[in-house]
Image (cartoon, rainbow, N blue to C red; front, side, top):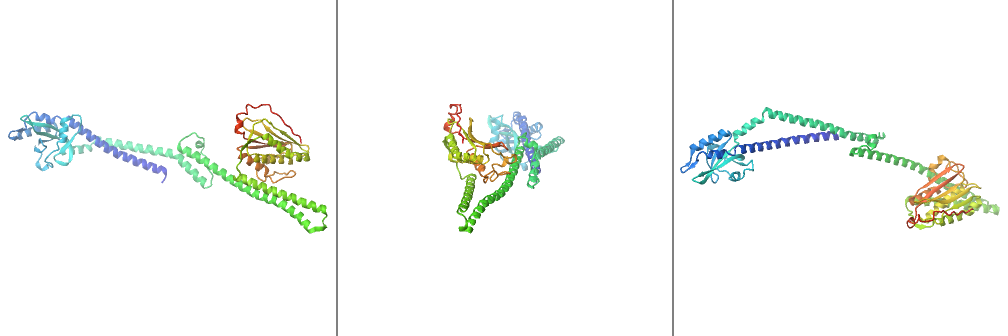
Length: 505
């Protein structure tokens, strides 16, 4: 059963229950109100009739006087029934036939309360003709020779009155009122059903979109819900579902991309491992087959080539192992404050000889008085080595490679730039992917893991790395490092004049 149907039926049931409760409540209130009005209007009947004639004398009950007073009371209130009680509540005399009497005595507590307090109304007393019912009454004390001899007890709502009231319940006026009330309830039910239809309409739309999406048909976006204009719960749920579907679709896309990358990774790893292995095997087999017939200089050359291929294979395996540890979270940076200028200088000195051999000018520009960096010095050293290695491999003789720090108030920026071959525009989005080397390979091209390792190390320090390149002009890689906490307060007090240290290789 749909939610709209359940809500409508529930609302109809609540209206029906409300109608029953209201009818019962109004009936009860009406009866009590009529009883109160009747009791207040007729409260003086008993007092009036007792003041006219003595009902109890020396010889007992004055029957003639009782009959006359009863006639007067019934003239004032046709539904009245008159009883003469003793001082202890026993019925002494009445005009009601004895066969109808169900009680021989009346409880005096309501009578005493009636005589003592005029504000509490309605008060209900015992009905002598029905042992299970209580009715409103009027009462007055009956005195004889200056002493209390009994009570004149007048029941105002008799059985005859009940039959008249029952007839009134079937009156045209009451039926008209009930008809109007029923029409109002039906109108309320119709309005409620319409409101439920309007309120559940967005929910039905959401359910249809969820069914379509689960069936693989995609999802039709609800622009009004996604615009954030409405803040009701269904609109919020709709926006959350839209966000969830986008996230799932994005994750599915990432999984597909990751699967494609995994396939490419396996192919690249297989190729990069197979190439040095095949080269080593070829040279070693040549040495074994020719043996003593191979000249000593050729033998040495073959063995040296096999050793270089073995070193290349070792470097590739080490890079793969390092990247896997970085991406699995096994490596936790051991952060400490250190002088970045000293680290830059040490790394540049290790690459100086290689730059000289390649005919490349290596420049370093940094501020020795700059703030200290906060990070893992060994991991940052690895980043600098990978970037300088890439820059030197892609920069031809006569080119220039620069390693420098850039001013920034919130962090330390490090830049490695070269005047090499550059990177094609279509390759830029994937230069940080594992094993990606673009359309062409420069001299000494490696496995393509260097930049992937750089990005992961920088991310572990809570920073980002960026790369800009122009084919034929050069490439610039820039990354940030956090400033050591102890140095943050003193950055503004340091000498803003930047001392430039240039090392020419």
